[in-house]
Amino acid sequence: MKEKLEKIINKDEDLQTNLNLISDFLKENYDIDLYFCEIFGDRRWSFFAGSEDVIAQNKKIKINKNLGIIIDNYSQINKSKWEEIVEFIKSLI
Amino acid sequence: MSNIDPKKWADNVIKQEEIDKYLIDGKDFINDELIWKQLKENRKPDKQQIRDIIQKSLNIERLEPEETAALLNVEDEELWEEMKEAALEVKRKVYDNRIVLFAPLYISNLCVNNCLYCGFRKDNDEEVRKRLSMDEVKKEAESMIKMGHKRGLVVYGEHPKSDANYIKDTIEAIYDVRVKTNKSKSKIRRVNINAAPMEISDLEKLWKVGVGTYQVFQETYHHDTYKKLHPSGPKSNYRWRLYALHRAIEAGIDDVAIGALFGLYDWRFEVMGLLYHAIDLENQFEGIGPHTISFPRLRAAQNTPLSINSKYEVSDEDFKKLVTVLRLSVPYTGMIVTARERPELRKETMMLGCTQTDASTRIGIGAYSEAYTQQEMDRQQFVLDDTRSVDAVIREFAEMGMISSFCTAGYRCGRTGKKIMDLLTTCQEGKFCKLNAVLTFREWLDDFASEETKKIGEKVIKKELEEIEKDPYFKDKNLLKEFKDDYKKIKKGERDIYI
Image (cartoon, each protein chain N blue to C red):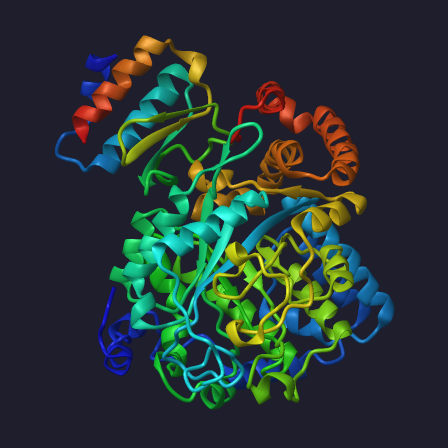
């Protein structure tokens, strides 16, 4: 997963653009709908990047105290792949 | 906390460049003459025109000013009945049949302004002034939590001692409070605020600590009346206030709430002003309109003659009309009716499309933790007409077949701003409202309800569960199983689960 993600992002672009690229990639290849939220005060999650089509949160993953992911169809890939994705995103921040 | 001289502080509040940037051709979005012209030109609307406008509202489309003006001019009683029925239908489509409950928390009545209708005004020397310490704020929050509240609306006067830094600290203090309940621990999950207009850099401080909705009421949209009623202080600047929420959205706070104090000027004009406010926010911020609209009526305040002697006082009948027209004009917005109103009128306005209300309300500074039951004029901004307990208010709603909701989900999973606007206008948010209303009502019944309320509450839950089971939307979106699992967890004692 890490290698695939490395291919699609552009290190010259900002975080928001790269998160959008990751979201598009996961949708196209794994039919996963997700969006990224900025977290404020450890409680308010505010849309930052990703799919506009996510209806309900199936899973919420906190990447760090400032960024989280809301995922509609979490079970499309296994837990270890998600861990790789989270680690990869952490490396972008 | 600031020890600066209040006058010096007040003189430096306004940043002209943070007004000018939102003006169009140097003008603000309220054109008094145009509003009166629209009200005049649409004076005799025909039935079919009104029915077409009603249909537009039922399609969850925001109305244009000429359309709202036509609704405001309806005289035919039969048409008003149709409008009232449509208002409730709009509410059901957008928000289902839930009513969100909150508690206001007044924590400072120090003020540098002199609003002629307000008990907190600077020159009112009969008002007992107080600003709560952080320990006192926490005690207030604790008392609110013990009543079962999850959502607070914190109210501040405008003063250097209740500036943005103080507001930020109070928000954090309230979020930190935990109270043991019979199943788990409870807390305030969303802190909304009603505070004076601020500059963008101050608003960013509030955004960073996770403020919920930011309310600023224009009080009156009529320029000349505004000028007369606000003779001094930063609030005397009409445009600084008018663009307070524009600055908030720019600072990141994408849940903003507008309102007018009805009774200061002609009620039809104020409804038009609120509509224009919603339109300008939508136009300047990619469709983000007001999260809620409030329409408090002027109430008696200590040593404040104007509060009991206004020629624009709004009758109960006109109040119901303005609620109806607002519901139809801005179908996506939440609408708040408060404990200023008598219980029977609150009940009626719920059937006209209101979506939020307060309960167990105490508006004296420090009033929750002191647990006093009598209203004390000299430490309140005005007098309430409904001081019933949250249990009694919820029981009444349940008897009406409505479910009380303590949901704070949207704010905690990115459903705010543009995202929630899209969900509201496509009638999808109401689906989440329904699920989360049931989950939070289940919690409240188990943790806080009296036996009497629990009995009727169970009937409401049963009906809601049946409706959820039958609604194909929940199956199609794979929400039904998740909801059922969450409901079981809450019944077993888990808390704060949401969809």
